[in-house]
Amino acid sequence: MLEELAKEDNYFRKIAFNICKDKNTADDLVQEMYLKLSGIDREIKDLKWYAVIVIRNLFIDHAKKPSNTDLSRLKLIQSERYEPDDKEKKVLDRLTWLERELLELSCDKSLREIEREFNINYAFTHRIIKNVRNGAKKT
Image 1 (cartoon, rainbow, N blue to C red):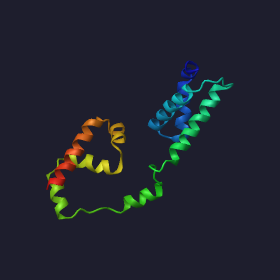
Image 2: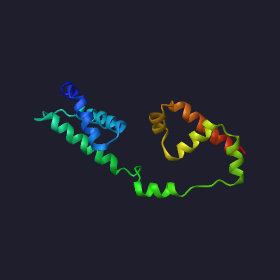
Image 3: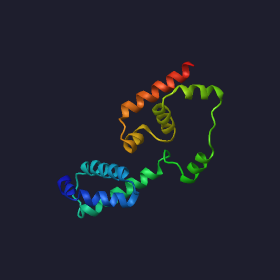
Image 4: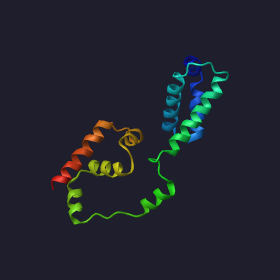
């Protein structure tokens, strides 16, 4: 069954991209679809159509997760600019440019999203942010 699906991989990725409008999410949806369909042991008449329905349902499940925030609420949060106090400014002034940028990005994005978007190694990002946060606690 998976061999038949693999022949149509580009088709499934295009369908997933049309549903979610994000290449990384589309790739994740297709991979999850393969995992879901690999566990099915019954015969399906129209496998291609069934796979498209599974991709759509996976996207709906993904969209319903509470980790995905409402965009209007996110814009409201971004419009309220945070201003650090004097003690925080002293700590921020000691950081390098890279440390400040990664720290700021980690407030809005997960480390995996930073890795995908900026092509920065996950472990490298995690180590820098961890060191910055631990160093900030000591002062």
